[in-house]
Length: 423
Ligand code: ARG
Ligand code: ZN
Image (cartoon, rainbow, N blue to C red; front, top):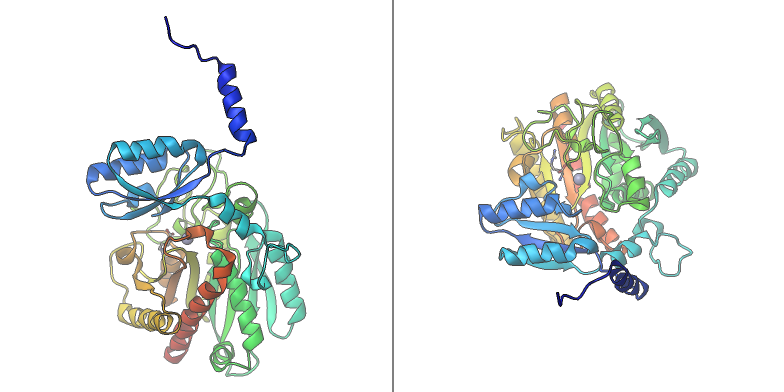
């Protein structure tokens, strides 16, 4: 027996040394492209094991040959995942080397922190700060802003909607709805809602397009539709997507709020397993956050003409249907609005947005809020997928907030003005 005996104590010492020198392996994001169905099934397995988190697409079932897959791999699984991909000759590269640095950049939100720069709107904010901002915004602009409590989250946080109204224009008024932060980790989305409200208040009666929009439509803005999940991404797990509800019969917490609406609920493109990222919940609107939004829109369905939902990332302007391959009855109109918006983004910001019906443009995603709103009778219904296309993914640095929001704002205004003309 000339094997060197490795004592647990030695292993512990080596590990402790690595830790002490700060050599704990960094969490990384991989870009993986599988060529064959066999490779696809390996990537699917890798993405559902080893504590990895799929960034793109949202669930393993969506992975197809030749699709660029973005996978977050924690430092502890790095070697295993890398070896597995190499062993099977699956093409992969590192997209992000050190996610921790990027997360730190995103969370340096405090203005008194010398490392953070830019205005309030060019930073990401913890949930408490957003609640504070909502109150302050109402307090500072009582003539334009009303705050409406539409319900509360699973963990009993208030779901607050800002109602923005102009003074001019004709009565009775139409309205539009914007929600942000359905998915917890998509931080650029709440940042956009704040950006939009600030822009609307600052430039009402100064810039023609936003003035016309606010004179023609009340704008309901829900800055954080999934406050429990958002909070969780700040405190515990930056990569969390779903809400935080526990159903007693389930093993895992969290329902995908964008699979919980009554639009071909829980069919292909969502999952009935609680531990999956696209878990559809127990029944349509089983989640208090989805129910609150649905109740509000049901009771305002005669005034709300335009529904917008903000997500990230991938740079797309999507419209119904996502819950089936069927074409929406006003597909042509929706397509023209999205096309015009994408052209403006290209012209003014030199950036590319894909557009089209959700199911055909990304994937089947039943139970989405946009399809549900459309079926309710809100015939102009869109989901925006904001920046970027994977350079930073969910970890978009704060310096890039302004461009991401400005281009989305351009698209929003283009579509809103188009809808005003039609309705
Ligand atoms: N990426 C988002 C998701 O997986 C949006 C997909 C489009 N689906 C929709 N219903 N609009 O939920
Ligand atoms: Zn999303």
